[in-house]
Image: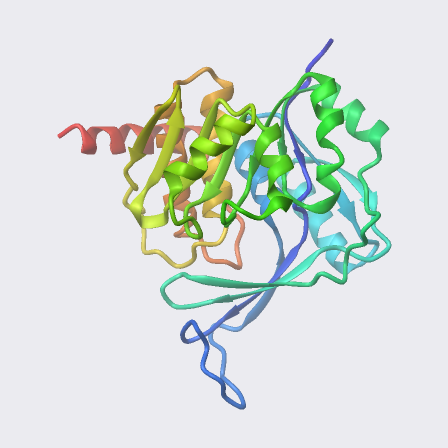
Amino acid sequence: MSRDTDVLVLGGAGVDTIVYVPELPLPYADSYMIEPGIRTRAGQTGDFVALGLSALGLRTHHVDMLGDDPEGDLVRALHREKGIALTAVPQPAGTKRAVNLVSPDGRRLSLYDTSRAHADDRLPEPVVRKLAESSRHAHVSITHPCAFALPVLREAGVTLSTDLHNWDGENAYHEPFAFAADVVFLSAAALTDPERTVRGIVERGRAEVVVATAGADGAFLLADGALTHIPAVTPPAPVVDSNSAGDAFAAAFLFGWLNGEPPGRCAQYGAVAGAYACTVPSTETAALSRDELLTGAAAAEATTSK
Protein backbone atom coordinates (compact mmCIF):
# COMPACT_ATOMS: atom_id res chain seq x y z
CA MET A 1 0.00 0.00 0.00
CA SER A 2 1.35 3.42 -1.00
CA ARG A 3 1.83 5.86 1.88
CA ASP A 4 2.09 9.14 -0.03
CA THR A 5 1.37 11.31 3.05
CA ASP A 6 3.75 11.43 5.99
CA VAL A 7 1.27 12.84 8.51
CA LEU A 8 -2.50 13.08 8.41
CA VAL A 9 -3.67 15.76 10.86
CA LEU A 10 -7.25 15.37 12.06
CA GLY A 11 -9.27 18.21 13.58
CA GLY A 12 -8.22 21.48 15.13
CA ALA A 13 -8.97 23.78 12.19
CA GLY A 14 -10.38 27.18 13.04
CA VAL A 15 -9.99 30.91 13.43
CA ASP A 16 -8.76 32.98 16.37
CA THR A 17 -9.44 36.61 17.15
CA ILE A 18 -6.42 38.01 18.98
CA VAL A 19 -6.92 40.74 21.58
CA TYR A 20 -3.84 42.17 23.28
CA VAL A 21 -4.68 43.15 26.85
CA PRO A 22 -2.57 45.09 29.40
CA GLU A 23 -2.54 42.21 31.90
CA LEU A 24 -4.04 38.84 32.81
CA PRO A 25 -6.28 38.39 34.65
CA LEU A 26 -7.95 41.45 33.17
CA PRO A 27 -9.52 43.66 35.86
CA TYR A 28 -13.09 44.73 35.25
CA ALA A 29 -13.44 48.12 33.57
CA ASP A 30 -16.01 49.80 31.38
CA SER A 31 -13.55 49.86 28.48
CA TYR A 32 -9.93 49.45 27.44
CA MET A 33 -7.94 51.06 24.64
CA ILE A 34 -6.31 48.10 22.87
CA GLU A 35 -2.86 48.41 21.31
CA PRO A 36 -1.73 47.05 18.83
CA GLY A 37 -5.33 46.29 17.98
CA ILE A 38 -7.64 43.34 17.44
CA ARG A 39 -6.80 40.88 14.68
CA THR A 40 -8.53 37.81 13.28
CA ARG A 41 -6.49 35.09 11.59
CA ALA A 42 -6.75 31.42 10.68
CA GLY A 43 -4.97 28.98 12.92
CA GLN A 44 -5.92 26.66 15.76
CA THR A 45 -4.13 23.60 17.10
CA GLY A 46 -4.52 21.34 14.05
CA ASP A 47 -3.64 24.15 11.66
CA PHE A 48 -0.46 24.95 13.61
CA VAL A 49 0.65 21.30 13.82
CA ALA A 50 0.07 20.91 10.06
CA LEU A 51 1.99 24.12 9.42
CA GLY A 52 4.93 23.00 11.56
CA LEU A 53 5.10 19.56 9.94
CA SER A 54 4.90 20.96 6.42
CA ALA A 55 7.59 23.58 7.12
CA LEU A 56 9.89 20.73 8.18
CA GLY A 57 9.41 19.00 4.83
CA LEU A 58 6.90 16.33 5.85
CA ARG A 59 4.11 15.60 3.39
CA THR A 60 1.07 16.73 5.37
CA HIS A 61 -2.70 16.46 4.86
CA HIS A 62 -5.24 18.11 7.15
CA VAL A 63 -8.88 17.02 7.48
CA ASP A 64 -11.57 18.70 9.56
CA MET A 65 -15.06 20.15 9.49
CA LEU A 66 -15.34 23.70 8.13
CA GLY A 67 -18.28 26.01 7.60
CA ASP A 68 -19.20 27.76 4.38
CA ASP A 69 -18.42 31.09 6.01
CA PRO A 70 -15.73 33.80 6.09
CA GLU A 71 -13.87 31.95 8.84
CA GLY A 72 -13.76 28.79 6.74
CA ASP A 73 -12.45 30.84 3.84
CA LEU A 74 -9.60 32.07 6.05
CA VAL A 75 -8.65 28.48 6.95
CA ARG A 76 -8.77 27.39 3.30
CA ALA A 77 -6.65 30.37 2.28
CA LEU A 78 -4.02 29.57 4.94
CA HIS A 79 -3.64 26.03 3.64
CA ARG A 80 -3.42 27.20 0.02
CA GLU A 81 -0.79 29.79 0.97
CA LYS A 82 1.32 27.24 2.86
CA GLY A 83 0.83 24.43 0.34
CA ILE A 84 -0.86 22.09 2.83
CA ALA A 85 -3.45 19.66 1.47
CA LEU A 86 -6.85 20.14 3.10
CA THR A 87 -10.01 18.03 3.10
CA ALA A 88 -12.88 20.16 4.39
CA VAL A 89 -15.96 18.29 5.60
CA PRO A 90 -19.05 20.58 5.58
CA GLN A 91 -19.97 21.95 9.00
CA PRO A 92 -23.45 23.57 8.98
CA ALA A 93 -22.84 25.09 12.43
CA GLY A 94 -19.88 27.06 11.08
CA THR A 95 -16.12 27.07 11.42
CA LYS A 96 -14.68 26.87 14.93
CA ARG A 97 -13.77 30.23 16.48
CA ALA A 98 -12.03 31.46 19.58
CA VAL A 99 -10.98 34.75 21.14
CA ASN A 100 -7.48 34.80 22.62
CA LEU A 101 -6.62 37.43 25.21
CA VAL A 102 -2.83 37.88 25.14
CA SER A 103 -0.91 39.70 27.88
CA PRO A 104 2.38 41.60 27.43
CA ASP A 105 4.37 38.65 28.84
CA GLY A 106 2.91 36.29 26.23
CA ARG A 107 0.39 34.47 28.41
CA ARG A 108 -2.94 33.61 26.82
CA LEU A 109 -6.54 33.12 27.88
CA SER A 110 -8.75 31.47 25.24
CA LEU A 111 -12.52 31.79 24.91
CA TYR A 112 -13.92 29.04 22.68
CA ASP A 113 -17.22 29.41 20.84
CA THR A 114 -18.93 26.06 21.48
CA SER A 115 -22.00 26.98 19.43
CA ARG A 116 -20.18 25.98 16.23
CA ALA A 117 -20.44 22.27 16.89
CA HIS A 118 -23.10 19.57 17.31
CA ALA A 119 -23.11 16.36 19.32
CA ASP A 120 -23.58 14.31 16.14
CA ASP A 121 -20.62 15.88 14.28
CA ARG A 122 -18.49 13.20 12.62
CA LEU A 123 -15.65 12.97 10.12
CA PRO A 124 -17.06 10.57 7.50
CA GLU A 125 -15.57 7.11 8.00
CA PRO A 126 -14.85 6.47 4.27
CA VAL A 127 -12.99 9.80 4.05
CA VAL A 128 -10.91 9.08 7.14
CA ARG A 129 -10.16 5.53 6.03
CA LYS A 130 -9.03 6.57 2.55
CA LEU A 131 -6.76 9.32 3.89
CA ALA A 132 -5.35 7.11 6.65
CA GLU A 133 -4.54 4.26 4.27
CA SER A 134 -2.31 6.61 2.28
CA SER A 135 -0.56 8.02 5.39
CA ARG A 136 2.36 6.92 7.55
CA HIS A 137 1.12 8.57 10.71
CA ALA A 138 -1.93 10.44 12.06
CA HIS A 139 -1.95 13.26 14.59
CA VAL A 140 -5.36 13.54 16.22
CA SER A 141 -6.74 16.70 17.81
CA ILE A 142 -8.97 16.15 20.83
CA THR A 143 -12.06 17.63 19.19
CA HIS A 144 -15.32 15.69 19.51
CA PRO A 145 -15.55 14.27 15.94
CA CYS A 146 -12.00 12.94 16.10
CA ALA A 147 -12.81 10.55 18.96
CA PHE A 148 -15.00 8.55 16.59
CA ALA A 149 -12.19 8.36 14.02
CA LEU A 150 -9.75 6.59 16.37
CA PRO A 151 -10.88 2.99 15.61
CA VAL A 152 -10.78 3.67 11.86
CA LEU A 153 -7.25 5.01 12.12
CA ARG A 154 -6.14 1.95 14.06
CA GLU A 155 -7.68 -0.36 11.47
CA ALA A 156 -5.81 1.51 8.74
CA GLY A 157 -2.50 0.63 10.37
CA VAL A 158 -1.13 4.10 10.99
CA THR A 159 0.71 5.12 14.14
CA LEU A 160 -1.06 7.79 16.18
CA SER A 161 -0.17 10.84 18.22
CA THR A 162 -2.33 13.28 20.12
CA ASP A 163 -2.03 16.39 22.29
CA LEU A 164 -4.14 16.37 25.46
CA HIS A 165 -3.29 20.05 26.10
CA ASN A 166 -4.08 21.08 29.69
CA TRP A 167 -5.54 17.73 30.80
CA ASP A 168 -5.79 17.38 34.56
CA GLY A 169 -5.17 13.64 34.42
CA GLU A 170 -8.74 12.92 35.56
CA ASN A 171 -11.21 14.16 32.93
CA ALA A 172 -12.58 11.05 31.19
CA TYR A 173 -13.14 12.92 27.91
CA HIS A 174 -9.41 12.81 27.15
CA GLU A 175 -8.91 9.12 27.89
CA PRO A 176 -9.82 7.62 24.48
CA PHE A 177 -7.20 9.86 22.88
CA ALA A 178 -4.59 9.27 25.60
CA PHE A 179 -4.91 5.49 25.53
CA ALA A 180 -5.12 5.04 21.73
CA ALA A 181 -2.02 7.00 20.75
CA ASP A 182 1.56 5.79 20.34
CA VAL A 183 2.92 9.25 21.14
CA VAL A 184 1.13 11.47 23.65
CA PHE A 185 1.78 15.16 24.31
CA LEU A 186 0.23 17.16 27.12
CA SER A 187 0.87 20.24 29.22
CA ALA A 188 1.98 19.80 32.80
CA ALA A 189 0.18 23.01 33.80
CA ALA A 190 -2.86 21.30 35.35
CA LEU A 191 -1.06 18.23 36.72
CA THR A 192 -0.40 17.84 40.44
CA ASP A 193 1.88 14.86 39.79
CA PRO A 194 3.20 14.82 36.19
CA GLU A 195 5.15 11.58 36.64
CA ARG A 196 2.12 9.70 37.92
CA THR A 197 0.03 10.95 35.01
CA VAL A 198 2.49 10.13 32.23
CA ARG A 199 3.19 6.68 33.68
CA GLY A 200 -0.55 6.08 33.96
CA ILE A 201 -0.96 6.85 30.25
CA VAL A 202 1.65 4.21 29.37
CA GLU A 203 0.22 1.65 31.79
CA ARG A 204 -3.38 2.02 30.61
CA GLY A 205 -2.76 2.68 26.92
CA ARG A 206 -0.40 1.84 24.10
CA ALA A 207 1.90 4.85 24.20
CA GLU A 208 5.60 4.31 23.52
CA VAL A 209 6.44 7.90 24.44
CA VAL A 210 4.71 10.53 26.58
CA VAL A 211 5.85 14.16 26.80
CA ALA A 212 4.56 16.64 29.38
CA THR A 213 5.63 20.15 28.44
CA ALA A 214 6.21 22.66 31.24
CA GLY A 215 6.92 25.96 29.47
CA ALA A 216 10.02 27.73 30.77
CA ASP A 217 10.73 24.69 32.96
CA GLY A 218 11.27 22.49 29.93
CA ALA A 219 9.51 19.14 29.53
CA PHE A 220 9.28 15.67 31.02
CA LEU A 221 9.88 12.77 28.65
CA LEU A 222 8.82 9.22 29.47
CA ALA A 223 10.36 6.66 27.13
CA ASP A 224 11.47 3.06 27.71
CA GLY A 225 10.27 3.33 31.29
CA ALA A 226 12.62 6.20 32.16
CA LEU A 227 11.46 9.73 32.99
CA THR A 228 13.87 12.41 31.75
CA HIS A 229 13.81 16.17 32.17
CA ILE A 230 14.34 18.06 28.91
CA PRO A 231 15.70 21.57 29.57
CA ALA A 232 13.97 24.54 27.99
CA VAL A 233 15.75 26.26 25.10
CA THR A 234 16.41 29.99 25.26
CA PRO A 235 14.15 31.67 22.69
CA PRO A 236 16.04 33.31 19.82
CA ALA A 237 14.15 36.59 20.29
CA PRO A 238 11.91 38.22 22.93
CA VAL A 239 8.91 36.15 24.02
CA VAL A 240 5.72 37.77 22.75
CA ASP A 241 3.16 34.94 22.82
CA SER A 242 2.95 31.35 24.03
CA ASN A 243 0.13 30.48 21.63
CA SER A 244 0.97 27.45 19.43
CA ALA A 245 4.20 26.63 21.30
CA GLY A 246 2.86 23.20 22.20
CA ASP A 247 1.80 22.59 18.59
CA ALA A 248 5.28 23.56 17.38
CA PHE A 249 6.84 21.21 19.96
CA ALA A 250 4.65 18.33 18.76
CA ALA A 251 5.41 18.94 15.09
CA ALA A 252 9.17 19.05 15.62
CA PHE A 253 9.09 16.00 17.90
CA LEU A 254 7.17 14.04 15.25
CA PHE A 255 9.66 15.15 12.60
CA GLY A 256 12.41 13.45 14.58
CA TRP A 257 10.32 10.43 15.56
CA LEU A 258 9.24 9.70 11.98
CA ASN A 259 12.86 9.97 10.89
CA GLY A 260 13.96 7.35 13.43
CA GLU A 261 15.62 9.69 15.94
CA PRO A 262 15.79 8.63 19.62
CA PRO A 263 13.14 10.17 21.90
CA GLY A 264 15.62 12.48 23.64
CA ARG A 265 16.67 14.04 20.35
CA CYS A 266 13.02 14.34 19.29
CA ALA A 267 12.23 16.18 22.52
CA GLN A 268 15.16 18.52 21.96
CA TYR A 269 13.78 19.31 18.51
CA GLY A 270 10.45 20.03 20.19
CA ALA A 271 12.06 22.37 22.72
CA VAL A 272 13.78 24.34 19.95
CA ALA A 273 10.59 24.70 17.91
CA GLY A 274 8.49 25.57 20.96
CA ALA A 275 10.92 28.30 21.99
CA TYR A 276 10.83 29.77 18.49
CA ALA A 277 7.01 29.76 18.47
CA CYS A 278 7.01 31.94 21.59
CA THR A 279 8.73 34.68 19.57
CA VAL A 280 6.03 34.77 16.88
CA PRO A 281 3.19 37.25 17.50
CA SER A 282 -0.31 35.77 17.85
CA THR A 283 -1.39 37.58 14.72
CA GLU A 284 1.12 35.69 12.56
CA THR A 285 1.60 32.08 11.48
CA ALA A 286 5.20 30.97 11.08
CA ALA A 287 7.24 27.82 11.70
CA LEU A 288 10.86 26.72 11.64
CA SER A 289 12.28 25.16 8.50
CA ARG A 290 14.18 21.88 8.66
CA ASP A 291 17.57 23.63 8.40
CA GLU A 292 16.63 26.16 11.09
CA LEU A 293 15.48 23.38 13.41
CA LEU A 294 18.64 21.34 12.97
CA THR A 295 20.85 24.41 13.45
CA GLY A 296 18.94 25.39 16.58
CA ALA A 297 19.13 21.86 17.99
CA ALA A 298 22.88 21.70 17.39
CA ALA A 299 23.35 25.04 19.16
CA ALA A 300 21.20 23.92 22.10
CA GLU A 301 23.12 20.67 22.40
CA ALA A 302 26.43 22.50 22.37
CA THR A 303 25.20 24.81 25.12
CA THR A 304 24.02 22.02 27.42
CA SER A 305 27.21 19.95 26.91
CA LYS A 306 29.45 22.74 28.22
